[in-house]
Amino acid sequence: MAGLTDRDAAGYLGRHAKVYVYTTGPMAQPEFAVKKQIRSATGFNPAGERAEVKSPYLGFDVEQTVYGTTSFTLSLAMTVRDLVDIARAVGIDPTVSKKIAVDKFKRVNFVVWHVDPDNPDQINYSECVGGFTARSFSGTKATGALDTVTIEGSPDLIIKGDGKVEIIEFIGNGTKDDFDLPEGVQETDIVAVENPKTVEKDSGWTYQAEHGATPTTPCITFDADNIPANNSIVRIYYKVA
Image 1 (tube, helix red, strand yellow):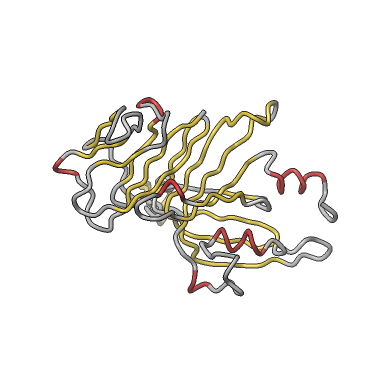
Image 2: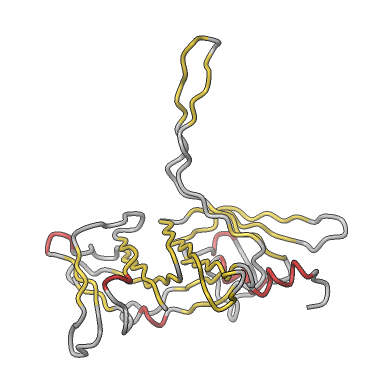
């Protein structure tokens, strides 16, 4: 950990916030998605739709309402030397890629777990960023400081929840109506269901505690009018112990 201050080391090790990037697993087995911790994350700031702002206009006693953007943006900052982490953050496989090119950036899912300051084994709060796509990549080289890079981009959906939340992602085929969850996930653990991407579905699906050939496997079942379209994204956000 040479070269890191005490504060930097805590951020690198994820003592305050643990940041993970998920790369999508095989279509038939999304539970095999790879989850890797972004060790060097020093800042992770997802922001949703900005609130409207009222401002005086032309000196008259009226106000114009300026609405914020409806797209979601976020930025992720880390040290330049952690090129493997940067590659993971933009959806590039660092085991096979020799370069980081903007046109190679893929969509990935992020989960940020905020650690209880008094209990490092407890997660107090989660931010789930589904379908993040990097849009820009900038570097900073301050005198006497570690080189850093900031990746800014836009995700499909940001879900924030109490406790420790995970993401599982599927691809619809136009006929499949049920999507398996890991064993032990209860109905009260379901935080959100997204389909198609960017759309949180508050209805049109139900939780099933037992499903298929393995009765202990819970699932989310969509009703006949809400079956996910072919090649559409299905993301399920759920709490874990």
